[in-house]
Every structure is written in C-alpha cells, then in structure tokens.
Amino acid sequence: MNWTLLFPGQGSQAPGMGRWLYDNFTEAKQTFEEGYDALKLDLKKLIFDGSEADLALTENTQPALLCVSTATQRVLRKQLNPAIKAAAGHSIGEYAALVAAGSIRYSEALQAVRARGQAMQSAVPVGQGGM
Image (cartoon, rainbow, N blue to C red; front, side, top):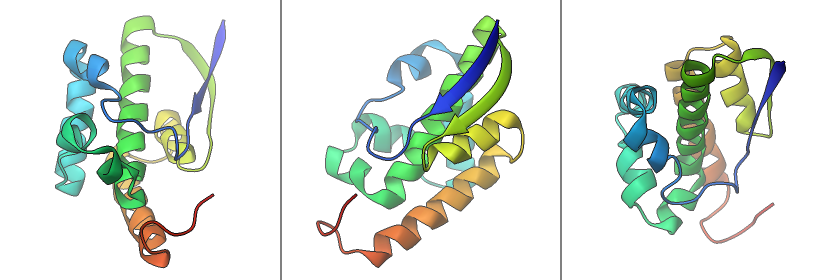
C-alpha cells in the first residue's frame, strides 16, 4: 500500500495537540527538542501549557503546527514504516510536507515559518482581520 501524507493548515491548532505523541514516543520528544534548538522557543510549553490565545497568534501557530506535524510523521514512519509516495499540505502544512519529503531540513523550515508568521502577524493587528 502506498501512503500520501496530508498536513493541516492554520486554524487546526489546539492547546495540547501532540501531547500523547510526546508522552509516548522518543521521536516526538526529539522533534520538540529540535524545535527549541532551532528557535529558542519552548514549543512544548507553548503547545501543552500555553493559552489558546497565545497559540492562536500566527507567529506561534505556524511553528507549533510544523512541530506537531513533523513529530506525527516521524512517529508514523518509525512505528509503521509506510511506503510514502507523496506529501502535501494546506498553507503552513506545505512546509511540513517539504520536511516529510526531505526537501528542507526541519530546523530550516521552523526558522522560515517563524519569520513567515511574524511577518503575517505584524501585517494585521491582533483581533482584526481573518480568513
């Protein structure tokens, strides 16, 4: 069976997302640690203990989704060793697809999406605008 990985975009985030993976799989823990190393941002604290409002800030949402998406695909690969033939994503999920495909390193993708999120956040004041 061939697999296609499909990654979500902004709006699918939720406080606590990925906690079960983090608590149960080394690959997930390592992914969160790599996230901290790349950004000097405690994604674990932001995602697991932060408020919904903090997580909803675009500059936080985008690296958080990339982190959990990458942790998920790494656990999936380690546990099931699927034959992955394609990867795609909606909006910020495109970066997770690129990481999954090996087209960009996770650390570089995190830095790119953090900068992207900060640029988007600065373009529209908090509480105004939307998609």
